[in-house]
Length: 111
Image 1: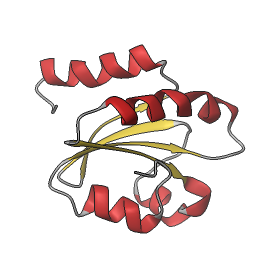
Image 2: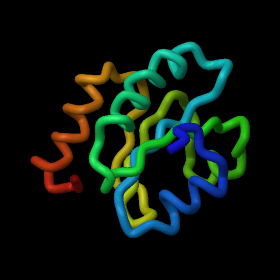
Image 3: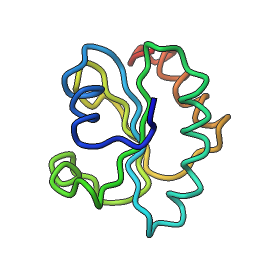
């Protein structure tokens, strides 16, 4: 599976999907975004198939970023059934990202 998603991929894996998805919204000119990408790719390669994980470059999808109210980058957005259920602005190490996803279970949000 390709980790960098197009608008078509985003619609398929997130908006038109009954499952869960984690998306890192980023852009090439953002240094912190480039730091965040490896942990997302690692998570995508290790997560079970019931969680779609991808990257969306907001420069390629400005309308989408405006619709979602994304103002600062990088931002991790967790979706369930095509709806935003949580977000985090900043960077995570792989362990922090895993912990954030696991804490969602203990709060009853998802996962």
